[in-house]
Amino acid sequence: EAMHKRQLNKWMNAAHKPGFVPPKAYVIGCADATHYTLGVEVKHHIEPLLDRGQPLHFSSLNAAKAQLSRLGLTQAYLRMSCAYEECGFAGSQKFSDIPLPLR
Image (cartoon, rainbow, N blue to C red; front, side, top):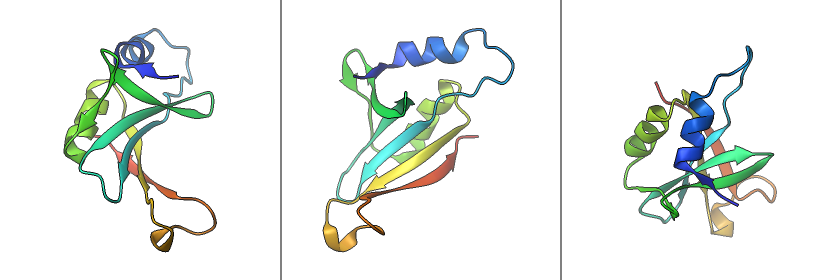
C-alpha cells in the first residue's frame, strides 16, 4: 500500500473533530543513501508518500521537512536506517526514530 500526496493533503485539510491527531510522518534516510523519502503511518504501518505514482525523493532534509510542512504537518520523525550490522542499533532494530519539528 501507499499514500498519495493528494490523499494526505485532503486528510489534513478536511474538517476534523476536536482532538484530531494528525498521522505520524517520517522522513526516511539510509546511512549510505543520497536522498530522503517520506512515509506516513496508517494503521500502524508506514506507507510511502507518492506523487503521481512515484515516491517523493529529496536531496536534503530541509527540502523534505518543507514538503511535510506545506502539507500541514507540524511534527515528523527522522527515521535513519543502517544496512550494516556493525553499525546497528540496540537489539535487532535496524533503525532509529528522531523527533523532527517542522516549524
